[in-house]
Length: 247
Image (cartoon, rainbow, N blue to C red; front, side, top):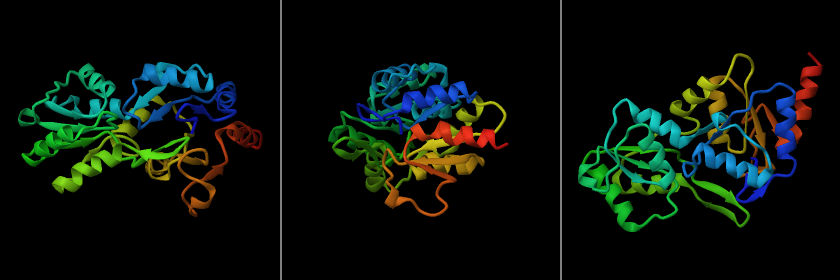
């Protein structure tokens, strides 16, 4: 929505600055579990030149850690180091021994190996809970769509027959974190994925804005999937400003 891999969406930083000037609170909710809030902030600055507040960042890793914090299971991680750090920050112990795991947590694992996938399958097979940070099957790059965290979770499901408990958008653990961050008033959910971003908005009764700069193109838009469809987030401030002026 704001950038594709290392390429920023033209006009996105100016749009965010204008939205702030218009009085809108900005919350950045991402299903990317490879990032901490600080690294999300760094990515936004590097790719589009916008200085986001780390306190305005919500990741699927954060939602997963909060979801598990009450039980503090011993976790076998099938995901990136940043996700492990996020889990440990909530007091969750990690283990590399599938026999000792109370739960496995899957995310976008860029260092995925057959051995680690097999360990996760063995852990779930002996009764460990199966938690997925997200089930986004792909993510966009300049070359095309790469397999996402959902593709890795799907491998575990195919091997075990067990569906994961999902924490990222559009599921309740992520929604609860977002709800805790926003104030009163109308909420606009802007994203490029109908099945995650817009479904989160639908579940909460928030206005859904689909932008066509990510995984969804104009030819893929179905009737009723969004309340508003824009080519890019760069068009959003003008759209909202017109709405405010017509009140």
